[in-house]
Image (cartoon, rainbow, N blue to C red; front, side):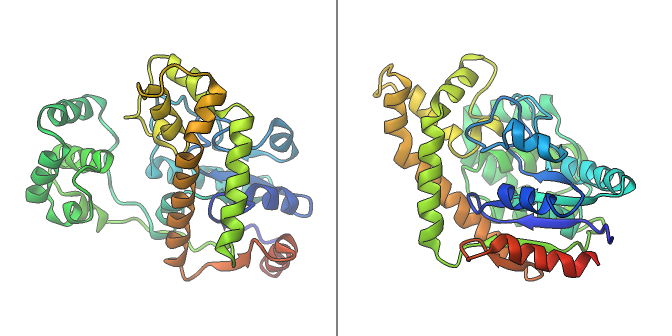
Length: 314
């Protein structure tokens, strides 16, 4: 059997997890998660993390590997994935990369630039400067130092402005120059679960977000917030759904309400953010012409996936 890694992408709610588990019934494989939220422990409901039963059916990787107080990068994902692929192939199994974090897929396909690792002390200095001067002022600084990167960032995009300034201070070079020095990417087949009817996906997302709230999503975020060491400055708490619930819990106008009341308050905001995420994911996918589209709202998407995989594996 050909053990060249296979990639399965798609917007949130497109059925990637179910499709991957169905494929595993016919092909000996191990799943590598391509999801920037599933890496975090204790974030289960809002990330639609596979259940214990689902995780037990087939080996999964890059799930529950970090505490929400930690950060994770595309560079770390690529390095870990390259190692995992070799290990899985050595076991005679197919590496199946499944997820919706398109930045990670793009880092794999295009290659990595020589970016430095994050420096917590330097980031704290930049945050302190922003607290005094504001992120638009730091964006103006960035426009002088790295106009190419600044031009594609909004003046209040704190996370990316911080990273761009950090890179300059650590390397003495603008991020745009380092992006030009990329390592070689991979050429792995990419299947993409995409809806033919956007309303089908919107309806599915509405049902799923309501189900998350019914399962205790607000309680999950409340417990994370009560730890005391997390904030909206962390990538984990900026995940879709988590951010909206966190903000609702902090909203003084809402007062101290029970979780059911908060769930009602946050539903529309959380659903809108989820739909925007799906829209961005689809836009990313459309920039990848090499992908093989499988309609997730078709009659038999899994059967179509299996047929495409069969042609590649034999």
